[in-house]
Image (cartoon, rainbow, N blue to C red):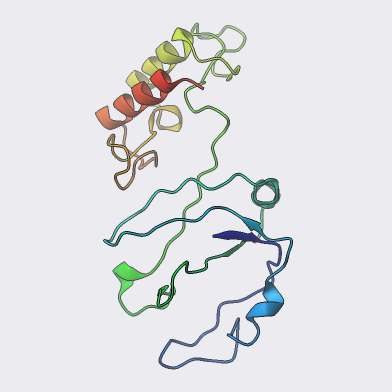
Length: 185
């Protein structure tokens, strides 16, 4: 996968069995590739369905593009021959691709400079993971503050939804926080 410098491409309206000439085509593809494009990593797909969580190389160009808002160009290339990528117009809705990018700060477990509500630094990360962070999370979890306490869909690493908030605060979120707290920064 690559961050693409060129954000001006458009998806065509055709389908594999009925290609169109609008959007990117096999012929026009080279004009959208640049030596300025940056690799975000190579990833293996082992089959199956459902979400897959991947960690991208945090290249500065991608970070700047996301921070600026607007379009972000990504290019996917098959590492082996005969790889097929479905498009957003694929007839089977459950097999259409979806991409969610979650931008995280330097350390998810670092939540506060102090655990006493109302004191300076409360709820402001300070680059240190300690018991203040744990007790701050515990208080926000107990209060039902989804903005802080909703951290994951499931608590099993490498399973779909791991580390992706789902709008529900439950024990999975608590155990996920315990895991990242134990890992430190």
